[in-house]
Image 1: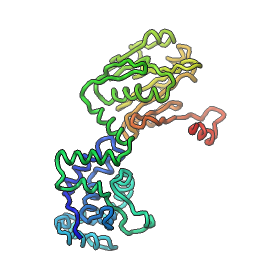
Image 2: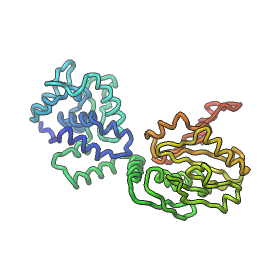
Image 3: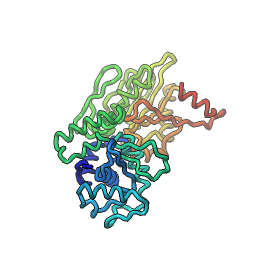
Image 4: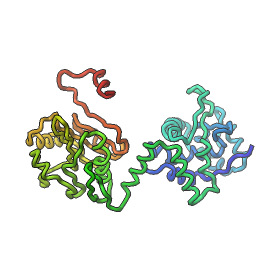
Length: 362
């Protein structure tokens, strides 16, 4: 049997970082060193879909520099056969301790490479079987051909992403890429007007709130107030603010965005804080903003509070979780169709879970 040519483990990791850019779900599981070791080992032993050869975490943890140096097909096949057996002893110092098999299986494979379509898992084996069960998909393995370089490599990577990453995953990658843009950009309001915003993560989230959140979750949205980092006022509608008696004095501690929704039953005020690093709608912040609305004559039922983040797995969200206010919402720009409700059920009577489930499905 002739095995496919392969690249070094270092080159595998370099290519993984290109294949799975910032914004990819569980990117660390797909790109860190142990992921590179996993992909390299599968290439080394020829564990590619369609060949009939499969790898297990034990092949990865028993790989060594001494074994890596043996590049003949015979040496690669011998390693695949020998290391697949219980109690096998690696050649030289193994790359990882034996107990590293769990994170390889649970994180690198099951949460990283399998969901992206890079690796397949045999379905004809019991989940508890120790028989090797994983293989690279043919299209993914082809990205590590040593003859594939430069522009052709990037073109093939782009094609693979288009074919295997979900539309949501591709949108998330594109959104994260936008945050690295150093040029100012336009944000389009619901009424078609545009404003220029400075580059940066906060501005990108603000753009998504206005262009994606507002039309998706509001019936007749409008922008009453928009500011960006440094308290720079991007837009304000003084005429409408005076009409609804809302004091949007810039000297006050206003939120990043104030939206309105024009309904038959009246206007809903939506206070939005954009969080790239810090500053969510906390309990004190919610109380201050609620007072701003009630001073204008709005009842609490006509006031909403939203904290907007770029992604669900960012440090800013983890950092803010403990301080987020109850009876507020969390919106994630990379998952625009979804909304997290922080429901406070302390008021009597507390609704049953089945009632909340019905509301979620309605």
